[in-house]
Every structure is written in C-alpha cells, then in structure tokens.
Length: 337
Image (cartoon, rainbow, N blue to C red; front, side, top):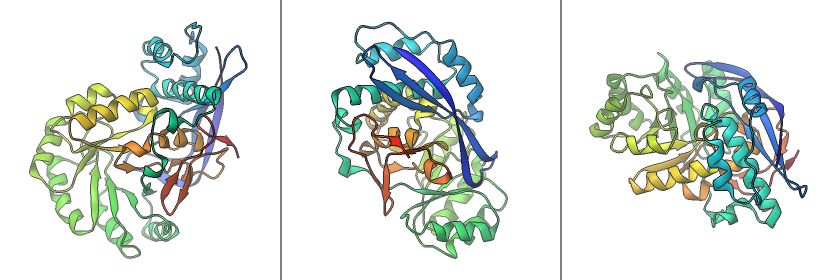
C-alpha cells in the first residue's frame, strides 16, 4: 500500500471558544491510501493541541511511517496492530489511517461501512449542536440560528456560567448538554449540578480535570445529573479505570485512534453499564461521517464539527431535524463537495 497526506485547513464560520482556547481555523490533515489494484481510501486527522498534537506533527509522523507489507489489505487488525507503536503519540494520525483502511475496504466490496459493522442506519441518534463561549447577544443569536436542532451542547467553565445558561434559556427550551472542559472543582460541580438540573440540562461532560478520578467518583456518588467523561476517556484502558467514576464516556476517533479502538471502547463501556457518546473535534464531513457510521450503537451524539466550518470540502452524513442520515455509498460514503 501507498500512503499520501496533504494539509486540510478548515475555516470556521465564526470564532469558536471554549474554556481553555479559541480558534478561527483548524489545521487538519487528509490521508489517502492506495493499493496495487488502484483502490483508494481516505481519512482525516484532527490533531488536538490539548493532547500535544499538531498538523505538522501528524505530517512528520506519517512521513516516517512504514506501512506493514501484507498480501491482503483487508486484514485491518494486523495492519493497525503494526501501527500502534509508531503512532502511539499521534492518535489522530492513527485514526486517519484507520478511516482510510475502512473506506478502502468498503469501496472494494461495494458496501457502506455501517453495513460492514452490521448496524441499522435507522437507529442513528440526533446530534447536539454546540454553542461556544461568546457574548450574551452572540449566544442568543447562535441559539436562535440552531432552532432546527433538538438538543444543544453549551460550553461552560467560566465565572459567568449561570448567566450563559440563563441567556440561552431566554430563547429556547430544548434540552441542553453542558461541557465544562475540565474547568470546575468538585465543590463547584456539586453546586452547579443542582441548578443545572432545574434549567433542563440532560448531562454534564468532563466537569473535573482529566486525572481526577477520585473527584469524579465523589461527584458520581452524590447523584444528580449524569456525568460523561471526555478528556478522561482516551482509550480502552481508560474506560476500565473509569468504572464507578462516571456514568458514561465520550469517544472521539481522533482521540482514541480510529474506528477499531472506538468499537472496542463501546463494547467495554456497555459491559460496565456505561452510557456512550460519540463526539468530535472540528472536522470536515470526512471525519464526522466516519464516526457517524458507529452512531447506531450509542446513546448520544455530538457530531457537529462539520457544521461549524464555512468551507467543508466533503459531503457525507446528512442531518435532518437533528437526526443523522448515513450515506449509502460504499466505504465511508464521502464525496467531494
């Protein structure tokens, strides 16, 4: 197989802010795999600075990557197992290669990815739409513009958290999911859960620092709103360690290393009676669609990264009244816009 990569710069519709950062563009990486028969597959790396990753780092890692020589490119487990060590610090690069392998497989046999996994496309959940940190007027406007979505995700983690929720509640009554991006203390979380429940909030994502498992357990034991781990849940090993500490996990392909690892995380979480959310970074329809193919297996979806960009170069998963519609084309089913 041959691997090629190219920069994939995405311009956001508006500045996107969370508790620890803001951005106007996102530099991702497009990965293309091809085999001797001429078959191709594509994937997207969405490196996160939070995990010490960058587009330049992805490119350097892929430049030095030796793909395993296999007689059958459909032996995905063997191929990806050989890439675990060289891409151990580049989960988004591994995810992109994983996506491209699955895309190539689906194209070769003429079947959409969700059918390869044996999933029912009618079971896709609705996706939340994210309202980033902004002025009160901007948040009211963004909320009104998101009227087609049945669930909102609201970024918190500031001294104005209560004002933010009150501002959004001035213009909508739809369910809200809150993401504090690890910005609260245990005491703040316990206090915040009380009033958030009264404001129609469904769940709280990552209220505490990623390594504060004892704190998460205290919050979980106190009862109240479901707690979903994001930054604390990167791989299968993390899911095992989180048992009893949270009510569920947020899986992102670029965070865990791709579809194969995500599928394992889903099964481990289910075995531990955990809820599962599929999330994303800011990605094009390429990366979002790859994740969406697993969405019939999960409880919650937060797959709106492509909806936040102004120049999406791909078409893939659709959204109708908030519900995700999977493409029926072979592989990932993604095509150039």
